[in-house]
Image (cartoon, rainbow, N blue to C red; front, side, top):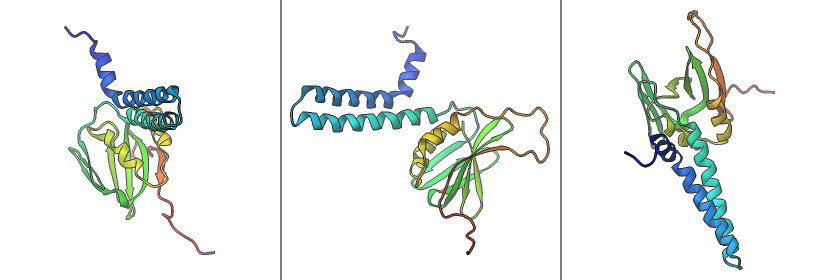
Length: 185
């Protein structure tokens, strides 16, 4: 019989990076409390590092979803891939033009559009989709707080009767600057 409840163990494992960042922040604050010309700035630097790590880890933890969709997400060097039972493909991070969050028939998917117009749909709750956060965070001028907020918003309800030509709910998460049609003045 385990001493700690399985739910508490699962939560602690899920939040282990947040706990580690908080521990580093606490160590930095302890060093600041010791005082002195050396320990105070050193503790401030360590505390700032721990705080930044805890915030990033908290956002990454909120980004992760329970696995409920078929398929596997791969993040390899500068490529994102999805291998599903009915489709999939690969997208280069350097070729990404925009990221949207769609609600299709009650299921949320990431729509990754390339510069050439091709798009890859990746279910939010596919295995390995939590690794997309770090890949998305490497994109220029992306707001990770907006990324997590879009993911945590309520999905659109699935319609009982699918209507042909139904337009899915789309949320623009990120778009590369300079992409699009430029008109001369």
